Amino acid sequence: MLEQVPNGSRRDINGTPHVYYDGYWIKYYEPPEDSLDAKKRLIHALTRRLFNHVEHGINIPGLRLDEARRAYQREMDPERKRVAGAMLAGSLFNRAADIFTKVVELQSVGVKIAPDDALMNDCGQCLLEALELGRMVRHRSGDEGLDELWGEPFKAFSIPVEDFYESRYLKIALTMRDIDRIADALVDTLVGDGLFPGIEPRIRELAEAAKRKCETLRTDPVIFEVWPAFVVAGERLGRLEPKLPRHASEEQTRRASQACRLIADGVTLLQHIARARVPMPKSTRGYLEQCHRFQLAGKKAARPARRTARGAPEGTSARSPSRRR
Image (cartoon, rainbow, N blue to C red; front, side, top):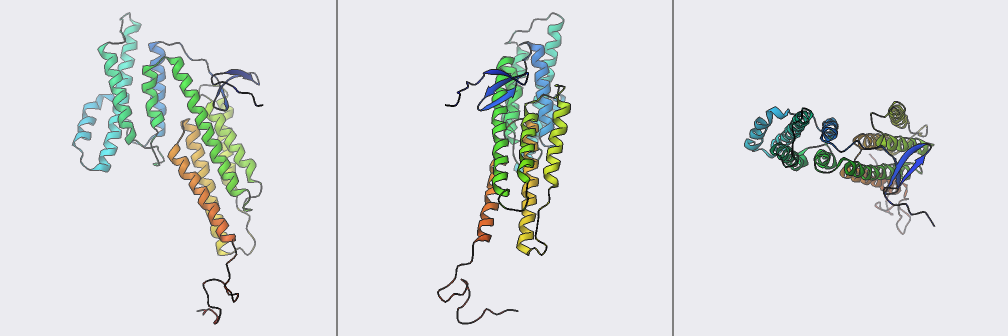
């Protein structure tokens, strides 16, 4: 029987500590001490990461919070109101970071700040409101929001640092699962198609590089090996060209073009997911459906035309030849 490994189990793999969650051994990093200063650094890092992955133009300074709120409240057009709400969410996150920074500065000079202090409550309210408005914010690709990323600064504020790190490992495991699902779908779709001989190792190379990127912090020295491997794996897969017969038909050429688009979309999605380090369920679901449609189209094209009782292809007359222009 397979070994049942409990979530949270730790093990050294090739001399590096790992932690187990939901089927994956993930590189383990010791969490910092649970202090306001550690939380300040964590919230700042999470906020920067958030703005790196969402649509442009919403990183509004906390100083302009009232201005951003008025703009959101007076906007009537639904589409523009969504963008105004995203800008307000960005300003709320920055205001919360500003407050936390000042609280830590006060503590550093001996001023005691209780957990229920008005400043701490204000910070928490800003993060909570930003989390609600974060539903309006889209990923930089425009495909969907990243609710998981919007929730992280609030979670880092409201729970112990060690618990936050534990929750991150669980999300990374879910992210790795989706990376494997996308890679498996691409393999199942293209390996038997004959257009790209030898494509499976390239797909697997990118999936493994994406998972390693997902588990590696940017402050880890090994990032100088992980990031180049991740970038190059995507480039190698994206450079593959279909093998077509010398006198390929229009249908074969069209299908090859669609396969190239499928590969390009898969590479882009894997890159987005690995960099964000959270699942992108809407985009993943859409991509798996795209692979399924490609497979169905291939089976339909390969199916021989049914013939009538007189032997003519279905849709033509058995008594008279079809006319040609």
